[in-house]
Length: 229
Length: 229
DNA sequence: GTCTATAGAAGGATAGAC
DNA sequence: GTCTATCCTTCTATAGAC
Image (cartoon, rainbow over all chains, first blue to last red; front, side, top):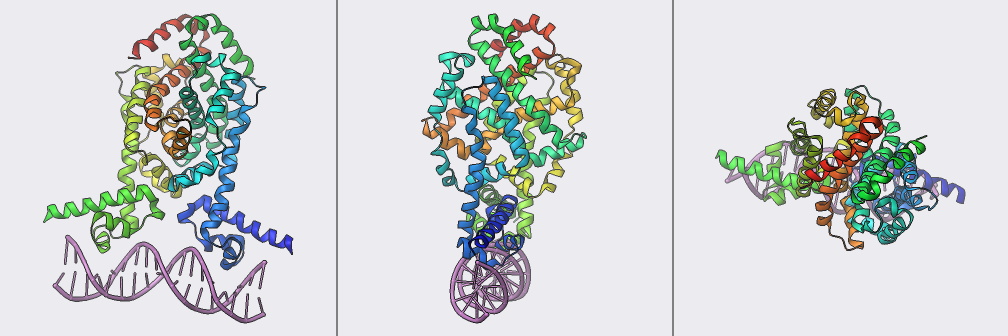
């Protein structure tokens, strides 16, 4: 009996996930969810009381899935360059499997900003800043690395990874016009994004510490090639 | 009489713009639009026949506004670095005044991909590629510059500019936790984004043409400072 | 052109039988 | 737990007076 409960509730939850992802809170219909779940509309209310509550459950699960993908970056046993490569490879691969997720989450947060509060509690920007400084301070300009810079760098990296999925409607149209494949774009992007960011960070470091820079420049160039397996 | 017509139609259009931007097509209510316009609900149908038609009119205007901001970049009388600086300064300044625009347009395109077709007609990626190659081929690695690379570079630049506005709900929450101002972030971003991209492009060029690179590296470094007025 | 009144349909939610 | 039937509200859209 409990197993069957579980199954029905799960069927509803999965159907709701599918419909909310595709249509958003406002565009979703309880009837559509019931149809996809293969059950009666009343059962939705039996299990989740209201559309709002059902949506909240789905949103929390999906938002947690999305946000959790940023945590592993803080593991201490990787160089900055390897972290950047690892992040783009894994993050873009994840988004390829969940391409509707970012726009959904961002859109629903925009509609109701309070939804983000629960997730912000887990984010400690200052701790992140200190950790990055400790692990990669020298590679990022030493004590000159301000919290503003960390916010700029981090938001830039996230932008490069996520935005193409947010704009995939346009991107797909543009690519089609020049006979490029959607999937090829993202395969290429995993490496391109990493090298782009690594190059930018290296260049910023060069500019802020020009004395060290001119000495270590070729050393750095070799590093790029070395990690570029 | 015609003047009054114009005024009413404009009032409706502006009210509709405001409501659709805030709530999206599905969340918007004709009653809200009528209230803000200060007229009767029936008048909406008198002027625009249906919610769909009213939405289409608003969407086309707004999407055109957003897309038109990419065109000036092709003017031939600027160096690549100045174009990058010009783009981020102007584009981010524009989005600061229209921060709800990107998420609205991207979201509605996602709901109905056919909406983007009309605007793709004006985009010739191959022409853009050839033009960039002609104007900045040497700065970007010469004939090695493929159409794939141009797509990657362009989408990266656009990502860096637009994404923070798409994610401004999260961004605002994160910034508040470390006592940073929303406006300061975007003021800083105009310059940060430009130097980040310029550094990345320079680095990519260095890697692909290492013989030229080692010779021109310091020359380029000065250029960065020179344009950084 | 602008309003009032209302049609007509759809959607969320509940009552009650099984 | 699951279904049928139905209530009630909301929303788009139209008819018709002025």
